[in-house]
Image (cartoon, rainbow, N blue to C red; front, side, top):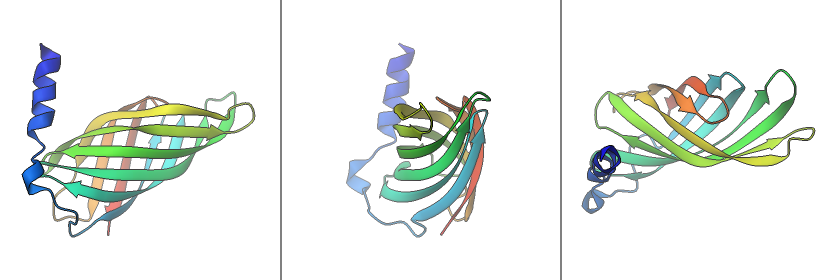
Length: 142
């Protein structure tokens, strides 16, 4: 029953009738750090709905679990739900780890909180994810 309520909340945040392709600040650059990785990312806004928007994020970083290290390349769809200061951020995508014995693709999932004023250039985020377990980050929009 809880899954149904969450699904209804997520679907109610999308209003296809008010879909637009451009918002004033479409691009952002950010960084986030977790237990096992750190990333620098470029994020591009793709769609704006009445109560949410969808971005695409790509980036590069380093993964290190104290036994080995690898370069991390990611491509992720970002769904940000909320209109004012507080947002729910959901990510789904893939991470490619390139290193000695680590050339593999892993799912990239994130569930977190995003602090972002609609007219501000700065944002912050914190949440839980797959490879880095817990991560925090910040960025600037332009």
